[in-house]
Amino acid sequence: MSYWEAARSHPFTYPGAHPDGPFVLVDDEVHDLDRNFALTGGTSLDDLLRTRSLPLIAARYPVLTYGGNRNPATLSLKMDHYRYTTPGRGTVIPVLPARIRGFDVVAGGLSSQGYLYADLFADERTAATELDVHVLLLDDDQLRVMHDSEGVRTDLYDVAVLHGVELPGFGESAALAYVGVASVVVSPLLNAPLAFEAVRATGRTLPAFDTTAMIAHMISASNLSVDVRATVTPGIVEPLDDMQLATELMRYLNGQWWWRQHTGQHRLLACERLEKAIRAGLAATSRPSKTRDLVALHEPILNPDNAYHPGEELTFGACLKNIS
Image (cartoon, rainbow, N blue to C red; front, side):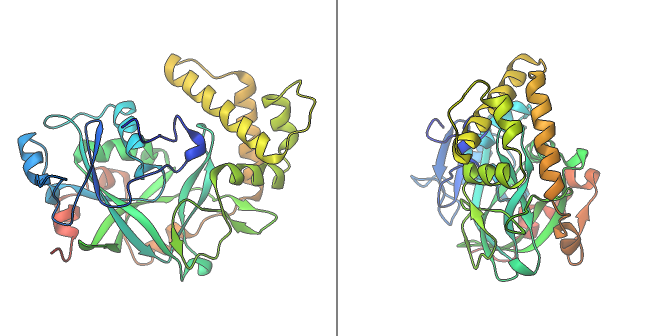
């Protein structure tokens, strides 16, 4: 696990690296999977799950992930931070590469951990975009962990049932997918949402940035430089360019998040005020996202109770149309 860096502790890596092909998180190790759901060496994934008294592949819930949840270390941290309770022995999370059409992944808002978090976005500009994403196969309490971490009960994300998710080498499936409730960040200079360069796509028309450049762009475009500099680099007389200022801001916010995480105490008052000012500055140029409404025209949006308890009809075995 030490090979993979979680964005919660390495904000500059957001949304985080991940294996190129199918993989499975087994406790603190990451193993490749082949198209027959076998680990390197030939061990069947279902056999491994049986020996640990864990739900088999077909009984798990497919959950689309397009941001930080593709990263093995982020998955491991979330299981810890949100107190995952295994129904058997240990933690096993299979993860499959997937592809969807008509969407892109854009900045949804500011995370207290020091980066702009991802949201799924769709409008006429993304109609021809094909997006590389992943599908997690989760047991009941892993699903609870992911929903808690994504704010499903606090109106940060709704959960939709998205059909037509292509799983190369496996078939086509439906999957649960997080769609943001709030507005998405829009650059007043580019008049567009900002896509994550690290999320591979073909046919992308939205402007794409890496994580630090995205923060730097919005600090400048939203006229936040003075507020950021006064809090993050007080007493520094030499000029800092936008990328340097963004770097310092990300370090500052991330450090304060971990202070709160480890101590349970409030962050510095200056940090609280700065984050509030940044959120207000971003909100001034944000635009309501119509992604949820567009998805709802064709796909069901689950209420929170049903999202946490989707039922057998939304297990992977029921959702997968064709597997060879």
